[in-house]
Image (cartoon, rainbow, N blue to C red):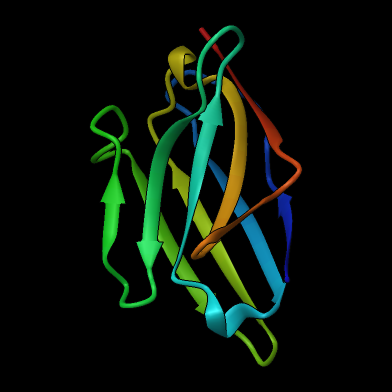
Length: 117
């Protein structure tokens, strides 16, 4: 079992920055990859960025060059960050943290990011 706690969403003007955090605890050493997904109203949930156990990063084309995913290990936790720069109104969505421990997927509760024009 993996528990995920997200923080860092909010309201920001276009062009601004936000940093999301996701702290994972529990069976963290079985996690294959962690990442961020987002879901805008009326849309499907989509991948934003992922980082594998081996630190390979993957980004959606719409955020490449603007968002950066990183990871930090502590004694019994791992925290994944999503630094979001040059935010656009179309980045407005609920952002969800994900931890993949094949065949299981764990999800955070979601954090709202709203970018005003």
